[in-house]
Image (cartoon, rainbow, N blue to C red):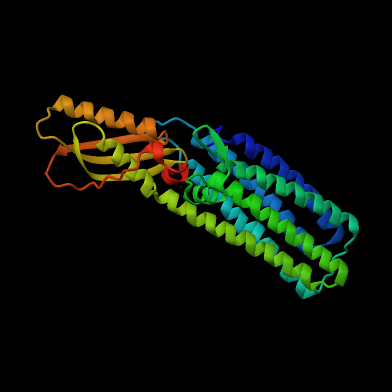
Length: 331
């Protein structure tokens, strides 16, 4: 899906961008005392930490397998992204909500002027650019053509097992919303001179951050425990195995992601009763070759071969790898 498998370059760019936004927003928040702008500042800080954690996770996950970790360190990415979600919830979200409540209780009115709002507007436009850049992760290539389809983007993001990419897109989109809320609150406060809207906006940004952190943590829990591949992937693996001469049935297929770009496959297949041991080994090797050629995300395959019991368990579909409508069907 991506020209750069690690994607560390875009995370580095996003980290420096969000760090710059954090400094600019923080300076404005100190000068005008806006709770909403303070919340948006924490949002940019959270995004910076998220990007750093993603880069650390990518680096740690890229280590080769060893005796203690025979399937590699791919799940390191899940762990470090989970740490980022904890920071997002515990620091940025709670800090924004508490700041908003404090401003409402103490009836603090922010000092607003045109210049801070203009600078925040520029930051809002820049964050829209960052969001558009983040969406390029889901750019699809099919039959030599490049296209960006909203429905396909949603399907890929929903099924994606790469939390770093998911976080980058979520945080970029939510940053646009958070900065928009802060900008709107400053405009309303400037017009009405009321403390209420500024505090409510800060609470809203904090709730937005908290919801995103909880959704990400829930997704990461699923991946850390061990999530299987989608039904389309499992069906495809079985259909490819059934195309190998000598295979009569697929008894069972179990899969588990052991990294963002690493899928473990355990298969139990049935072969013709008349075949010898050497033929069975050749069939196993051919299945592994065919599946890995079609799906480069499959890095580990364990195949158990048994004799045909004359009962058909696997239901083949007419779909083949080349006929899939989009990559979202095999993620």
